[in-house]
Amino acid sequence: MPPLSAAPAFRALAARVRPVERKVGDAVRAYLDTLTKPPGSLGDLEALAVQLGEITGRAKPEVSPPACIVFAADHGVAAEGVSAFGQDVTAQMVANFAAGGAAINAFAAQINARLEVVNVGVAGDVEAPGVVNARVRRGTASMLRGPAMSREDAAASLNVGVDAAERALDAGCRCLIVGDMGIANTTAASAVLAVLSGQPAARLVGTGTGIDQAKLAHKISVIERAIEARPTDAGSPLDVLASVGGLEIGAMAGAYIAGAARGVPCVVDGFIATVAALLADRLCPEVRGYLIFGHRSAEPGHEVALEVLHAEPLLALGMRLGEGTGAALAFPLLKAACAMLAEMATFGDAGVDDTRS
Image (cartoon, rainbow, N blue to C red; front, side, top):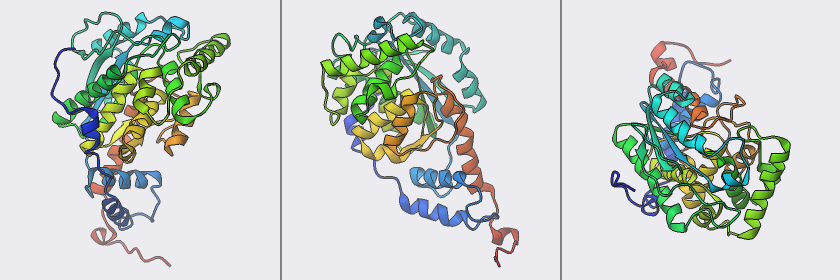
């Protein structure tokens, strides 16, 4: 892997993550009730404003400019016939990201985000200009035949995410939006979630990129057999990642840890990204306070992952694309919450009587 910007190992960085600042949240909550509106009348937007205050430590937080980081990797389990598409599509989509033709390109431009695409483990050659080459290895191995990767590779994937987040934050970004691309990554994410949550694979697995019912049953069987072949302790999240996970899942978890260490909000996308968030939470529980969940995916496992994390997403649009698209669409709500705190008048400022009968 070519040298990238220096960043501490994820474990050292995790030790720097502090609890969010609840006192600032209390101050924001009190201030909201002085604004020219009935108390609580802006609903969940007010709760979001409180969380942004807690994350940033500022009574009037700022979240612009945001960064969108898309991590791409391949999965050896694709060879087991669990996806509707071939593994070569991953490299093709990375080229599409670089050319500006994907959904995340459109949505990132809409919110004026810094967009970076990171090759953390694409199996094929990627020669698209602008793609950061941080490849740990050329895809994982099939989890059905052995561990997806070594523990060292799993740790390296986390550090790739740390590096990418640090680059964005050093460039002045105030919010992280993290996405994924990788054929068969719903299989890896489902396997990781099954181990971490203790839930059966049949409850978690969906159609992914559009497989039929026969292939769905096969996908469930592959996950069940892989977990049975190599029982992994849910209390050892790095081992879970190495056994049945994916390189982009590790990278996203590393990015969340880095964002939390720098006190910026991390907007979590759909199913794959939420499993990565759960992994980050298990590696560093204080990360949870820095996570804002962008949307509710149509993938069945997403509901379970959200339940485990006690999370309620901002949007529910029936999406299941990945790439960070749902999180990017939710970002304007963060901006609105900040604008509410920065621009609305108080009753006193506006000369409005706030006495209620």
